Image (cartoon, rainbow, N blue to C red; front, side, top):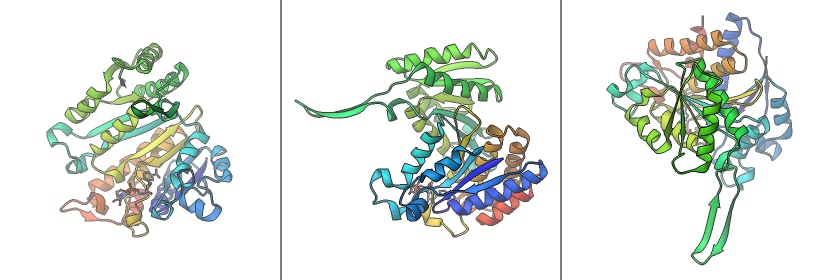
Length: 355
Ligand code: NAD
């Protein structure tokens, strides 16, 4: 299995090193062979080539079976114009790989309940919500503009969706729901927006192909409220680009630990892009302080969604739980009475616990 790896900037190389350890170990135990090819993106690419996403990088990624990304960005490149900044590489690679469905699980490990801002009784025995966000359409890509008017300047952005765009992301969400609790919540604003009314119609049509999955709908304002009131009512959520941007951040912060959360972005084939949701954390780069779990869990998602290896993915997730049970914590999730571990030790322990 060919994996293109983008270590990136800041803590990127620190956390990617830990993912290698875990993948090598899981490969041995589950008889899989990985071939890694490291490529440049973000600040590291700007320094060496002048571009945030060199053509060669995109080519290697497109011809791989999966792409694993650390994080990009840092103060050094913050003064460059938008299209030359490290983050332009992120948008470019998502577009270049055609990944239209962004999967962001919000998982609260029961061992880390106290990290959440919610009360223990709301959290029960932990949280596990999967947000599926449409990634390449909607208002972030629609027509926009400005013009002078009698009331000063006027500006507009357009939320537009086609049947095809909604169908394909809905299918991804139904497939995921099928493999979990068979419950899907589609979130829209169909009481006001025409684009949401089309969204709802299409999701209902796709639902006919998945009679085993129970589909519900919720308005986005209510969903934002329900996520903090009773988050355990949700299992899989599917929503548009902008609503998903906002709700997935809200859902992930319910877990209180940025360093724990992975993500996957999927397209039509098996090729996917896997990355932690956090940034390059320049404040702790190279200090053996970064939590590598988000990246390690992103590698687990890669095994599940690009390589179809549910067994090996589950083994990584179990191992993370075991190491937390043993009381090891990186500084960001440290709690009284636990044992502090650096980035390297955490990676070593998670790799060693895989069985
Ligand atoms: P950040 O996520 O990098 O850091 C926010 C805070 O969380 C910092 O205090 C950091 O130390 C901490 N943190 C983040 N990840 C951690 C981890 N794995 N372990 C322990 N602590 C962790 O967000 P920011 O500070 O707003 O951004 C820093 C840079 O990252 C910026 O250049 C930004 O543009 C970039 N960024 C990149 C991505 C990406 O590559 N996908 C995403 C967001 C931000």
